[in-house]
Length: 527
Image (cartoon, rainbow, N blue to C red):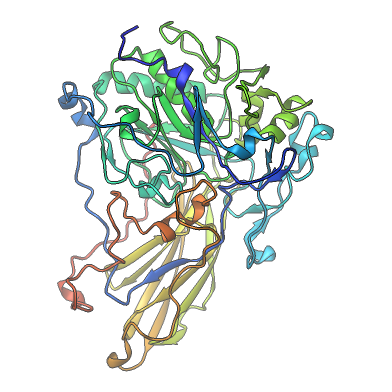
């Protein structure tokens, strides 16, 4: 083993939430949706999308000799502590369990949640599950069983820290804000082989691995940043790093890191799958035959998989276990045993075709509705699919010109549109599943009033409600990151949707580049 290489399995880092609780208490899942509406604010003009120029997957061979990052070690967010080989929250170290999460105030149970399985439905040992672990219901889109997507990002990008987890918007609790995460240096052939090996690890679940083309923003997916080093993040020395405590994957949009380059294909796949497992709530176990194991031989040419029995969870001195309540569900006892496959298979459906496309209805307003120029347009949607894990967005257009699109990252089923000048607009809601099937519904609305009434100070509160701060602590819900974080998909500072210079207002629509709305079934790229 090279001196510069730190055994990845020994130092793979799992970051967990750190609320102040007493031992034995159950805390809500910090990644559960907040229910804050998605806001489309056109008071400064059409919403702009950042340029997507950058390296492509087929360019990977050009980056083989790019030197590693030479930066000082980063610093973890406040309240997160790295102890030896892992980073844990004080709450979990003190014995707290993590529950499914509860409904946030203001949600409408008849519209926003669906009945989900309880302990008796999910667990091999329901009598051992602590109170609170399965309290609450599922927000629409987060139901079990789910289908899922993993995106192996080999082309890097600029990520932002401090606003929770949102893979679609390049937001990561572990990001080194504004620092360009490097392009993978192992070349195209090795990248494909690694992706195939990771896909094999999830062969018993309806989870696909994509890497050539990034998924649409509306679709929830886990993103793995492939390459770089721990110095390209805020973590300490590690072979890989991931946010943790998302027991049974409430967040759906986490970002993790596999610091790989020239290692064997099996080693790179083992590291990547372990970090993905952490984002789904799995902790380290003992054993030398599974990707979640602590201390396996990282030089052994073995492509490991997820454990198919109850294995002992690693607990360092003074630390508690991971997702203790879920472990009790699947292995019984005190939660110090973890069954990798049983846990993942309670979230994800078995593999197989998905013949049922998703649907979405705009339930409010009615088609043809009229609004005054200073009135917020509240759009409510009813998405559905036969499997959980789907996502949806809303596009506002005028003629063939797209004015802006927002994803409902908070699973609120509600959008608020403000700042539109007088005119007639098309509102199109789209929902997408993990077979890239898309359902849609469109309506038209009219905004009435005098052009002079379109000032930004219209007395309408356009801010989305929040339920947590934006300090970057793990208690920030991933569902709220896009609205609270104010970052674009390239990780740069958001421009509040303005595509014009300071002082300019709505440019003539004829001068805008028409963006045609395309509804198609995108080709799934499987490893």
